[in-house]
Image (cartoon, rainbow, N blue to C red):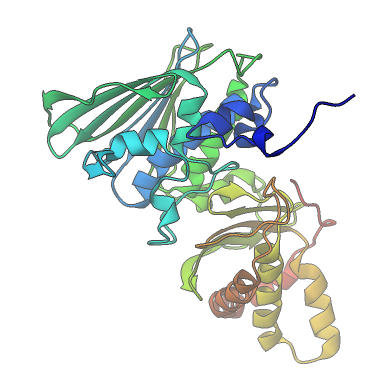
Length: 371
């Protein structure tokens, strides 16, 4: 017979206990290594935010033989001021739903992550977590053991600025300690394209040499990387950055006789299945090209051609991105749709006026989208 169930059985989990009770809900798969990567990239995202706020220029990611992960940036450091009777650093590291991303300020200055949970849940799943904050001329240090805060230590004066975080995920929660270092490397390279001028340094357990990823021309460099090399049929690249209807838009595209390639991002996350921003680019191009058309037959001709041989990288930043699923593979914000159409139309008008004859002279292969 089942045990009696009544109100006495109700338990309220406090603090970080909810994270430890169901860690998979916060970081994903605990057994295949992807949960560990999610933890690492959550910490990296805090450093990328510093770059997006014009505070940082270099981010170093180091993987140690003993399983430690380390992320260092040259930003402005984590604040130390008192908050709810504790240092802001301690509150950020031990309290759920704490961080600048919740105040809705400067909506285009935060990088998205697959989980987007902040530092406290990461701390909850670590044996120890060390934080060095170099801020306002002082070096501050705090260590957390099993998420319990130690003493905030003043290490003295410093000329440095930035943050160093070193943490060791607990084997109590993660059964697969090995990381897919190629996946980490790929994500850091991708971020270097999306954050023009930000340098990433990566040192893995397998390779002692420090790798660097840096792309000063941003998504133009990304587009050039995926376009056919030595293709004389390439049209000039159309690149622009714009803010339309509170949506920040960056786009780079061109056409060639190649197979084509379309890659899209929202708040620095890869939207593998595209979404409204990709659909809107095509409609904006159609709207701009229609200015050059004199008949319905001609419109139908170039509409088909617009998607053939198209090489496109599009990235949007919005205050409140909405996705079709928890994996965040497809963007669905309605306001982004109209914003990208208008921005693309305005920028593509002049482009087509200069390159119309060249565009129609291309011999296109069948369209092919590479995920």
